[in-house]
Length: 446
Image 1 (tube, rainbow, N blue to C red):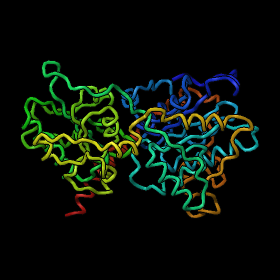
Image 2 (cartoon, helix red, strand yellow):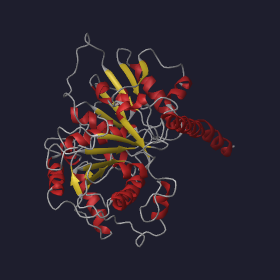
Image 3 (cartoon, rainbow, N blue to C red):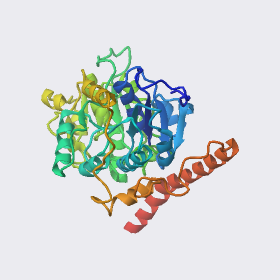
Image 4 (spheres, helix red, strand yellow):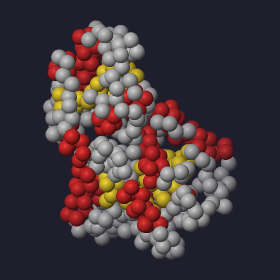
């Protein structure tokens, strides 16, 4: 990831486009960086991390292949100031919906009066199974709203059209990290048959359900001693991902009856590298299922805890992948339905061509029109101001007092001191989420 461009940045007519990627968590950074390369092959995006409770650690960034020393941590107003209209051709917002909406208003204010502005792109990091209308309307106003499948594109357009908003920004593509070599079984002398349970930070959310899943993974390992069972974790205790993890599996592992057997262990690392040695991917509803299906790895979406919207596994209805641990213990291997795969964007051949053409059209003269989000002071006067304020903007998209960009001459010592205070505050927040809050909830149940 390059350092910030100098004042002698290339003109808009040169290629590749100049791209800024703003992300607010480890997985959204992975999605944003890979999407930027898909939209603008050959580009070297400038990376920005939106400061907040889910700001990833250097280890998390390294796990998704990012050199954290080349990223700039910013607030919303600081990013709006950094993304000057003559500095970038494309601004990619890989953030939660509220942050996207706030930045759309903040950028609209910052770019007001400029003869040209960058094209703004946003989307979703994975399967969209909850808060569909809320999340989509918070993203409305971007020039391109990427839909990861034909199924999602149809749903996205229906939401926008249902409120009378322009749906022309919705462009079908695919998840940018669907890649890797096709699955080929390995001989036993090369490596053991490997079952990977892809854990999720917030699904399921109950302690007993998460412990149950660990127990079943351990039981599968005991029933199949020649297999290796890996529990793939997203983060270490104290780290945050896109979703808050209140009950880390690492802390539950000691409660597994009899302990984890020798052929069952917890692992970290890049999911793509883990899939290179996977023979069966098991999950509740992780996007890792789509990564595995893209490669042709046998994939099971668990039904043990029910098929429920809260779990997200309802998204896989009709996929042919729904199965229970009992069936997997007995040797069942799910076979995906080709028609379902086709609608879910698992085939990535040419998936980003339409998006590339859309961006190229926006950058051609006369350039994109002014940003026009659906949410305004007139359409959502009781909702929008709070969203903007949380991210440092007033109702007109201007930086709130004291939230503007840092002075260019701010000393390194002052920046370092502010960084120490931020890290301490994050540590306190994570401790409250992962240690204090569960205790309070348990006391409430007494």
